[in-house]
Length: 131
Image (cartoon, rainbow, N blue to C red; front, side, top):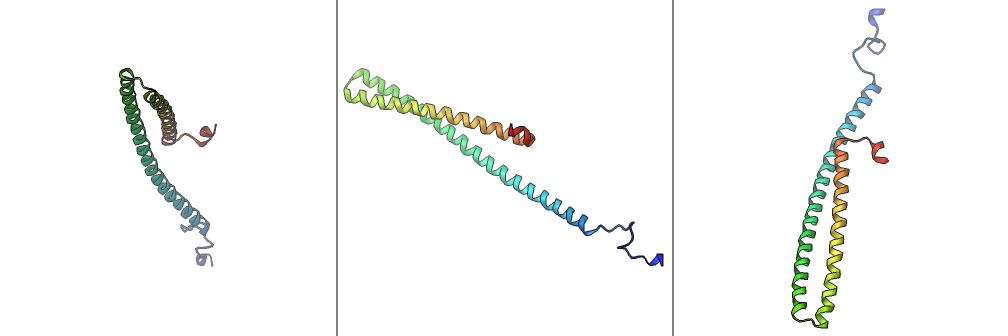
């Protein structure tokens, strides 16, 4: 009768039980899903980085243009100091200060995003990032 023991009853059988097989399938599915999410997030982050860099370049160009215009306006003020020109010069100087301030904020944000990206790419444990 021992020779007739079925594979289900044989502990030395090479077949895996259904729970082990399901666990491996879930693990494989999780790995595939994780890799897909990682790939998608990497492309989104690269796209964001590109757009953020374009914004920083645009801000630098705007800052340069405002500086140039301020210089030209200062020259106009020296040549013809009319109250109308002085009023607009004050407005342009205010715009210049706001653009410069915004540019500083954007650069600070970009540095922070770069630091977060670096931490994620290095694989710092989640507990360290929560602190």
